[in-house]
Length: 169
Image (tube, rainbow, N blue to C red; front, top):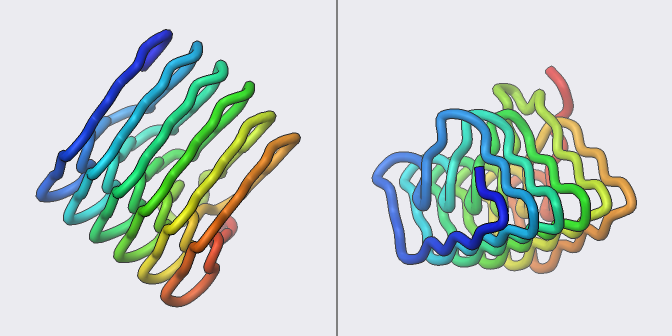
């Protein structure tokens, strides 16, 4: 968990998953915190990071990611149990690439059963590429409420240039 803090991660890589960091559990970023991840790579999942639980960005916090790449899912990051961005927070991803799904990020939860919730916040993804589905992001269920979601120059090799919503299986 990150509260009232600033975390900077630059020029990192992992031979498997989580180029910047790997969390067996959830990631909570709150109370005006800021996380910056630049130049992060992983051979498998989560170029910037991977969390086996949910990722929550709240309390006017900001996550900025740039130049993140994953060989598998989640070029920027992979949130296996979903993503929540709320209460005036911002998630900005630039220049991210995934070999499979979710160029900017993926919120997988097994067979894409978990959701993305963006509430009273901002999501911006620019210059993101997915080898298969969801140039910007790939997820199961998406809810956007009173928020701004902007996708610029995103591309997918198969489905969903901006995003792919796979639904519950």
